[in-house]
Length: 299
Image (tube, rainbow, N blue to C red; front, side, top):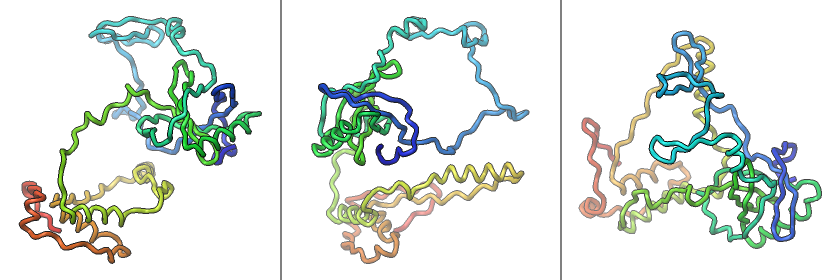
């Protein structure tokens, strides 16, 4: 059993197949539902929870029961072809319960943007040796497996990779489901003075740590909502917190210097080269115009 799944309940079984090798596996969720924030819609008059209804605007907003609905696909504007349950069932991908590995690729070539969901994989009965052999070999060769998995009526593209002495599987999006970053407006080519680049590097260096530690982060919003719920349930009114003052935009060079200056005491020994002359600075970085009525921010 891989670390983290001891005592966990499997959500299903399958097998990994490549070449003539078949490895029976169990699947486990990588996350669990927390007491997240969830609100219900209520009738303001009586505070009763409202129910959702489907209406047909073509039939004078008649309320439609689910039993009277059919599924349709819009092939042209306001034109649909309908499918009955038997037709939809026939179109579904046959669930084989097998993840068929089609290739192994270098781990460095996989982009995280394609990942949709992640599951832990543990070996099922009789699969320990093959499971461990595959995990170790992929670790040594720094490879990730690309496979196809027929599940829930669809053919799912998946990635299997070694993880902490075991294996995990990622359900991933197909290429045509991921938008291109080229569609996003980005800055044109810009030139920076060496001192500006040095300040940016120093700021990143001062805020850098050895590794990502997710356990040190916490959902403060969820805590605030829970405290507010407790207060209201006890009959107390909430008092609005004052908004934090919005910092005015200042020029880039001064912003970097101020950021370094405001870092904790352990960074006080950081050295920064002198700023360029005021005239040069104005030419290289434009100052943002202050908002009407707002005070000009200073470094």
